[in-house]
Length: 141
Picture (tube, helix red, strand yellow):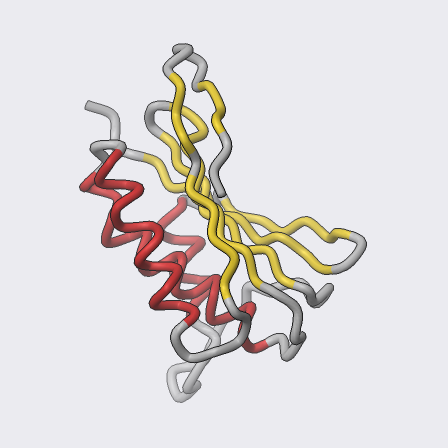
């Protein structure tokens, strides 16, 4: 399922959308398989590694919520230099950026997302869940 949007330069760009079986170990891998060819198709090869880390973290967080509804991954080209990675799930539990201690075994993922996006991420509550998004930008040339 894809939709078409236009960037401010009026270049049509197809977004990538995939509905995943929720909360399975392979959900993060399936999200990466959607992201990688999409970014390469948009000639944004330099964003693939950071994008894979981000989509893996967002999918992992969605899996931890325990809700059994579907999970939807969307990769959209917001501008020529910005890509939005979004995960929609059926839980209304919002993600929380915490400072994990040195001995903590988890809790660093959103800090990584925050760092990779320069703080350009957020969450939107919806009637039956939430969408968490992260905006990844290319460096100016």
